[in-house]
Length: 255
Ligand code: GLC
Ligand code: MG
Image 1: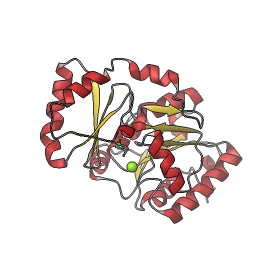
Image 2: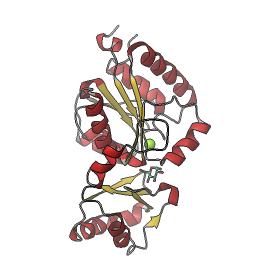
Image 3: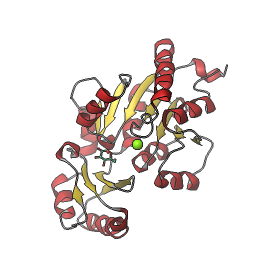
Image 4: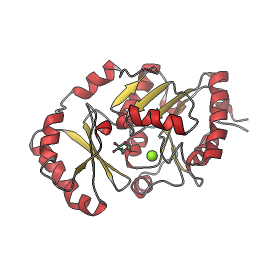
């Protein structure tokens, strides 16, 4: 048995097309993670692009373990208990330099940006649909226009359709870093898993162990190819089966 498998770790995963997508593998992974949590105190965290509303909808459709913390809305909301409340300390960090109204007003000039439903708009997240074709021109233009208006924000394009505009201090990776520091867990004892553009921040924030599932989208694959290191692993298997493969690879789960 690998040495590290008998210690707690911080397990962070995206949901759609990462944890969720292969029901049999999800059941197996759930069982191993729950056992590890009970025996060693391993912590389970979901980091999703979904709002809390859409997260709750998913929990009625798939058997998800209840997480020790929940990061929703692409890292712009942190829930430390099962209620609706967002962690106020994290909200404080995000509010620095953020001006939601100004982002909305600037983006309104672009007819290619189609606002996502109200449920997916957040205090610290403005989201649109954008086609890949239009994105080529719109993304650089919007980015420089936002900069010119003095807005230091982040544009995250995922899955060839979703554009999120986030505060400079917010994304999934920074939210995990905040949590890791709060819980005093080292990056080497942290594993992050994802499949698409909004997960790149999970892998790029530091030296957390990274598992990129075999079905990852092009934007994440390209980033992985350009940023190879020992602590990032591209799995062959898809979704939860890819996560299992990666957990064994890094020795978080042993034989
Ligand atoms: C989820 C969210 C959506 C976001 C996308 C990519 O689908 O519901 O608002 O744009 O993730 O981050
Ligand atoms: Mg995903």
